[in-house]
Length: 264
Image (cartoon, rainbow, N blue to C red):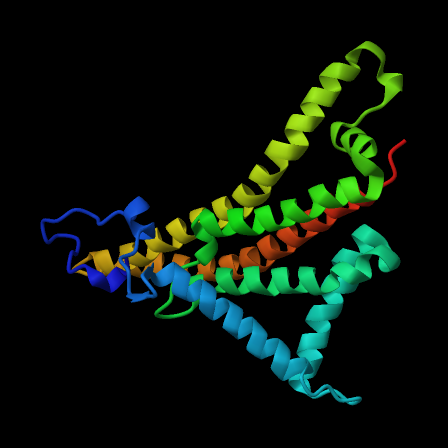
């Protein structure tokens, strides 16, 4: 719900139109091949298009002396490659995962950015299905990779944290590690991104709607304060949007690093 979609103002005898779960439910905009497409779905597709267009424009005709757009693209690419992938996996092992991690970072960041873009004003990742899908993608990479690298027995030892030096507590540790790695890890990977973007969007909604709701009589003074909070929260949200994309990719790299690590 956008702030101006309600005619309710303070002193008009109506209550504050509090945002809630209904703010994350959208009616279908159109149907494609029998599939109903709503706003978050459309924004997710547009995120892919924006990222593809940007990367093509930046690197499609790369020059020895880069232009401004190529410089921005190279800066972002090198940040992910050297600052995240190489740090977690090393240059030799990590190089093959750079395209995936760069794509994940920019895709997630773009889906987050819709929250502060006029008209769109909604972070796609505040719908749990999208972070869950991306977390599942990472899960389906590092789990099979674990068994491919170490074999079946070695993979089991890797996932369960097998260490014969633990003595009688070994069975308990193995059960906890198995539960943590195969269930808790993908769950928290998705929820961390979802929860931050969900909470951030709710806060922005509250203060944005409040700015409109208080715009009546003496409430105008309070509306100004609320609007200042909208600006501050928007600036803070811009930081969180990039940070959450960074954290998601960093965790993905750490999971892959764990799959590749030699078991002792």
